[in-house]
Amino acid sequence: MPTTSPSTTASRSQAIDLASDLRVTVLRLSRRMKSEAGPGDLSETQYCVLAGLNRHGPSTPRALADREGVQPPTMTRTIAALESAGLVTRSAHPTDGRQVHIELTEKGAAEIEETRRRRNAWIDHRLRSLSAEERATLAEAVAILRQVADG
Amino acid sequence: MPTTSPSTTASRSQAIDLASDLRVTVLRLSRRMKSEAGPGDLSETQYCVLAGLNRHGPSTPRALADREGVQPPTMTRTIAALESAGLVTRSAHPTDGRQVHIELTEKGAAEIEETRRRRNAWIDHRLRSLSAEERATLAEAVAILRQVADG
DNA sequence: TATTGTTATACTCTATAACTATA
DNA sequence: TATAGTTATAGAGTATAACAATA
Image (cartoon, rainbow over all chains, first blue to last red; front, top):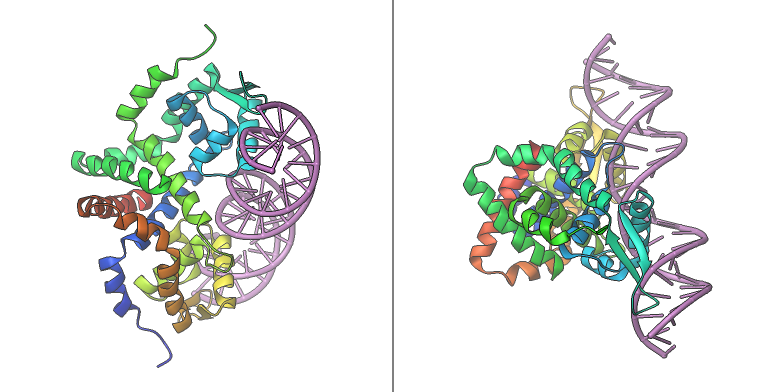
């Protein structure tokens, strides 16, 4: 019998493998999120950088790269795109000539709100169809996953 | 005052925007997962396709593309990579000459187990550092998120 | 005519390596 | 010598458009 028997391992994996389920689900969600983007929309990473600046205040390329978990050249490109769109400003760091001061502009802050309305529409819609308890579970899980991703 | 006031919107976004937090967290997690891959490892999508075949049994390129939320050409490439690695077989569909029958090989099933051990090591480690309650919350959240991604 | 699958092509995101400037 | 940032280059993943084969 050269063929395998999927059902044998299937029940096992469903029962125990939280890590595997998490991987599959996170990947599908991230693809789905990206595919919901329109032509002129911010990319996922661009949005995350703006949201981080909004939440934590001005920063530097290095700190932003560390926060998002990308390498410095990637952040350079992301910042360049945001700057050319007028959503952030690059200026000299007050004390360290090597560093660059990245700050959200008013247009950038407005873009965050606009993006949240437009771009989160589909996921908002999905979330609204859940029960309050399910949303509470998700909110807890997001906090836990944030630690997992950063740790 | 040309500068914005991040703290004003920050408290608001922390309080209400589950959708935004979910987007940011999912993106960081997916980047982190990808970055944990070694040189010869399966890509995230390749792993997800194998896991789907293991869980649900043989399928077709179209059905796999729909399940993963990618376009057919993307699935063609993914399957080609898996086939050339000997992890799946492509054969004629028994009744419909247009379709292709995709089946997991024994080597593919073994690769799933191997990948879960090696590749999930870092996330398993993180999950083990959580409390049982936190893991239970995550397990519930994964089930909910699966619906969100598919819906 | 509609559907399945593939090929051709291009774009985005990300990474590593090499370079410049400042500490 | 070490760190921050950039530039140059390359690879992986994905998409759209066009095509072939079958229903």
